[in-house]
Image 1 (cartoon, rainbow, N blue to C red):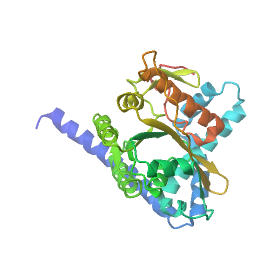
Image 2 (cartoon, rainbow, N blue to C red):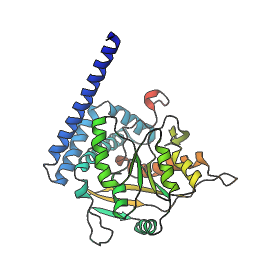
Image 3 (cartoon, rainbow, N blue to C red):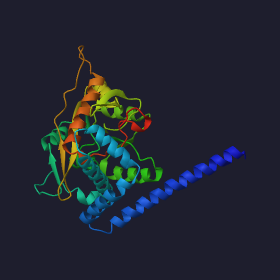
Image 4 (tube, helix red, strand yellow):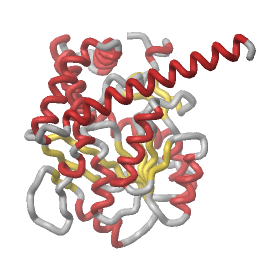
Length: 314
């Protein structure tokens, strides 16, 4: 065996072992949380994330993103939002363990629980009058609850998601989501065709629109240039379907409000065709409005502005 091939195999084996080790550590932490009552586990995860987050390299990126997005805020305000964002991330991880227990909303009951839903008439209309549509959201609050709510209302939404980079964690997450959220489409080169087939067959799809997309359209977010995935806008142009914004908001006491908003007006060119660039920008504007309302409930450690690659400086 050539030396180069041998070294390559060793490097790949070490990387695989590292990914496996990280996954096992994460699973062990989540299993420990299972030993606690849900509320206590979620609060503990919040405190742990607020402690460990500022000690990671991602905290520097988090602070830079916040300073760029909110130049009018003081350093104390920036730090407070950063800690809230880390706490939100910790809660999100813990809530995976208790998702079945947390989601207590029953569309056919008046009982008030952890989950409250705004836009119930829209859910009912989409269920009772089946048609192709797109629902989009962002990484706000516990965004994982939205497809669970759709399933509770009997909506068979095909959801596009980006698997975690760690293959062992990705496998667990996929299995967990699939059991509770209906049809899932991992984000890859052929995922757009899967979503197109779903819409062409009269079904609905769901997408996250606040992820970095290197080859995307030139748009802005918080007044700074970002590349935005044109997929949603192109699907609307092809199928002429309605587009519904949806989000999750954290409430005090480990409660949540899920909001489904009325269909968005889609920008069009003079010839009546969908304006793909303007639509992509409108999605960013909607997400920005959500984030400005609850800045500590968004994942600021994401490199949405591609700062690491020097496209934007702090």
